[in-house]
Amino acid sequence: MSDDRDRTADLRDHPAFADGRKHSLPGAPEWPVEEVAVEYETGWITAGYDRVEQPDGSLKDYYWAELPPATVVVAVAEGEVLFVEQYRPTVRETHLELPAGIVERGESFTAAAERELAEETGFAPGSTSLLQETWCSTGALRHKRGYVFAADLEPVERALDTNEFLIPRTVPVEEAVEVAREPPTNDATLEGLLLAEHEGLL
Image: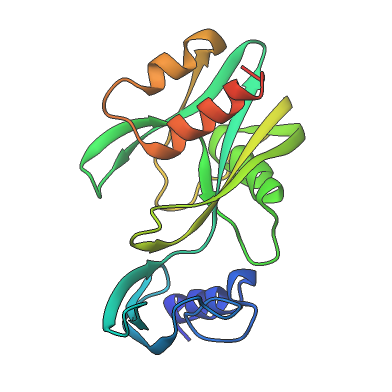
């Protein structure tokens, strides 16, 4: 069995789909779903549409792309916030971002944050707390993101994935939001820092 097929099986078993239905969501929807169609499927992303009965009785196809949950880490040590600099082929830009990654099957957002932070930056947190869990881009995506604050960092060995070419960077806490707002920027980094700032952690 190929790696892609193995990964797809993992996603189907992910807690986000624990009700056993393929590419659907738990519970009864407010608007009746007449059909669920999968048009594109890989080990990373699945896309399709729900044919939905709208309040006026008409039917409309609502397209979606499904991604596994991700964790985003706001890690602070000695007055510095940890970032990673990496090129994003999707948008063809190099971004300064908060460490982040996919939540593996059976992991919590905080456990995934601990693992991703260590792998990407070479620091393991002594404490973590979940700042917020959100849905992302709900007009098109089925994708959850958890923002985690990490502190009490200790150096460990990095363990990058084969597609990760990251350079760890540090930014003074008082400059982190301003630096993150400089183009090019992204939603996950800004949201994570603003949540941490709101909680009085920056």
